[in-house]
Image (cartoon, rainbow, N blue to C red):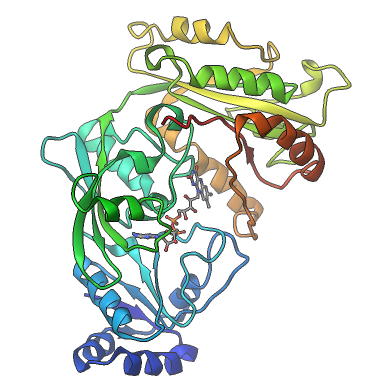
Length: 410
Ligand SMILES: Cc1cc2nc3c(=O)[nH]c(=O)nc-3n(C[C@H](O)[C@H](O)[C@H](O)COP(=O)(O)OP(=O)(O)OC[C@H]3O[C@@H](n4cnc5c(N)ncnc54)[C@H](O)[C@@H]3O)c2cc1C
């Protein structure tokens, strides 16, 4: 069943849509669904970026793949009518909007998650949040997908349409590398199963396809056993060259002896910026950090932090202290400028949730976010640091400046 939310001012566009839609059965579907909810239509004209706003004619909430197929079929029959799937609207440039068209709110799509036959994968609806996937797979099966995003308030369909990168990427590749198969509704309203061997053109077009090749209604995601605990550590560097060379060394270690997660960020040598200054470095709330305790007075205006994690079940049996020490010994961070904590696996993967809560409390979560993600070759990272971090972004950006190495081979 499709449930439509319609703004009063959009009634005229609805009339146009129904007439453009053609057949009386489509008209009946649309008319039977009409529930006016102005607030929800406003939601579909907004995203996390906060710099683009496009109003749709209809904001539909499909609960089944057939609902999605009906909406796409209707659009296919109409001249010039566009459709956009909306995951959780966390893109930053209006990608999940459709001016005068149909926006599909994927969050209510079913059926619920289930373990795939064989038990090594999970079937999830395209609109499931990654936080929901984590909670369900760990609680019910002590398993979890291997590759994550930092923030989990994003949908499976949304990140699979982009890539899905985080600190596990150097081992497992981005989230798009960890998909077994998908159900996709194509732009002509067909429902198709695809994988690396079935309809593979569609499979590889949809993964990272920016929502342009069809709507993901179900994804089968690979699972691995979930660890119980995580040793989480942040270490500080005074210069990019040392930071980058250590980070690159870490991501090229054999899997058996490597960290499970490697990320990093640049931060300002400044106490006053809560989002990109010193205070963004300590792991546990309330820890004080003053670089003057560790660094020369002439330290650069931009510093770097490497963020590392080692997964374990039993600290002694898994030799976590020894394994970590073996890796840390080789690194050239500023000794003593380091923070660590042992936290549960779910808490570690959910680490951005408290940051979100703080940003909401400060009022900065809802401000415009003209964010940029760029992939830079290793040979250019020093130039990038010199010209961008140390010149353009010298005053900070009011948010995180993540920088970490990935491997082309993964
Ligand atoms: C706070 C924050 C933290 C982030 N952290 C990370 C991170 O660590 N790693 C990372 O890789 N990215 C990260 N992102 C970026 C994120 O991957 C993208 O914003 C992406 O758009 C996911 O958001 P969403 O699920 O809300 O999808 P939306 O923004 O709603 O949609 C994104 C795109 O996917 C399409 N789409 C949505 N659902 C479907 C579907 N079911 N089928 C087909 N197409 C669909 C939309 O039409 C649109 O083109 C972050 C974003 C934010 C705001």
